[in-house]
Image 1 (spheres, rainbow, N blue to C red):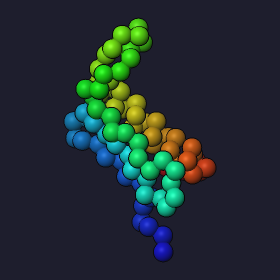
Image 2: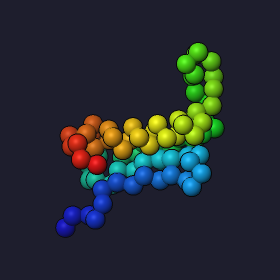
Image 3: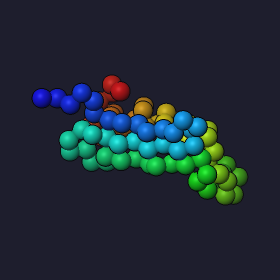
Image 4: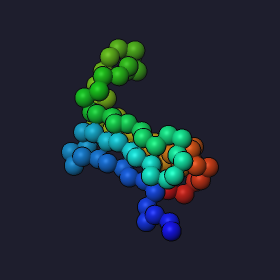
Length: 77
């Protein structure tokens, strides 16, 4: 019997953090994240900067677009 869904994207209501969990059996990369708006990352000027809400949104877009295609050779989401 197939599961009713194969993945979960967890996002808090303020967009401050997100994580992705793939529930498909045998996934080689079952978790991505978590990412937080307060994470310190290298900015475009190579200086430390906070990821911010936009960075969390980028993570969400990337994971929704790429996970199945990258790890399961599927393009549907």
